[in-house]
Length: 381
Figure 1: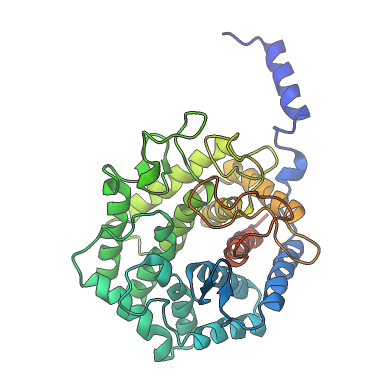
Figure 2: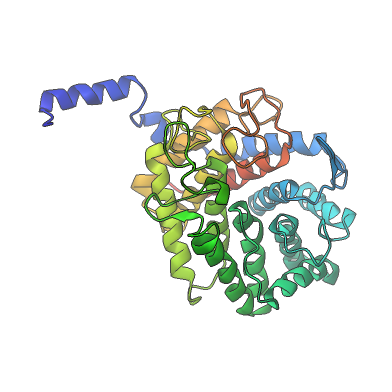
């Protein structure tokens, strides 16, 4: 159907009235002081609620506090510390490692990426103060994998974010490309092989969370199931890998292209209010504001702008709209972070999600938010 100029003008007017157009406010770069203020407030809320970083986490059962959810929080805290050198942040992270004796949930023989997530912070703290105990266990468990032919461990996409940055850090630290090679073996299994043809859909440039969601599985509207936070984990994995991986690595260009394709696929499915739905291709399936996935997407896009990889003109309004939405609509006066979907693997898990809903774990959502805030803080005029 041919759209006449008058009809086109009417359509634009409707989009503006319904809030779908990018407003002048959405294009305005966030004030650095305000960005830092809201990050401090959300983090202070958490640190006051959890004064003992070694305390076990009680939800439906007791878990140690070096699990992946807390590991993601400390990733965000360490990024915050890099732009806001408060000794309390560093001490809180060190005490966490010390309380767990710099160990992993299931010891040095674990191959589970969730267990290894804590290693990102252990290594970062080692780089600040190279005490051998900070590195010993995480290096031992990754070395076990590097020296093993097995490469089918990453059978869910969350695993990429939990473990890829650990392999990258160790490869850089020890100047040993075997860590990079093994990382790619594990990544390529998840991307191309798991579930039959892999968890990546090259047609949509998005990832299925695990083999349970590979077609013929669909969402209620008949579309593929692309879980927001799951794809957010992939964004974060690629960002935290590309940030350190030498460009000479033979797979650097593939990681970079996967990153570019993924963030581009997210552009048309951002909500008018700045958030993303938990189901990226079915807005009616538990649709609504959700902070953790939105934060990871904002983090990834802001990082790409800061590195000169992504078009500032194309992506900056998207990032600003997302950050403004989260900072103004999700953050409570006391620092509690709302609209965080609880743990799970698909849109229906951890529901309902609302401004006041309390997720089963408060830590990982905050970690994602701090990662996003740190990159938004770095944005330049």
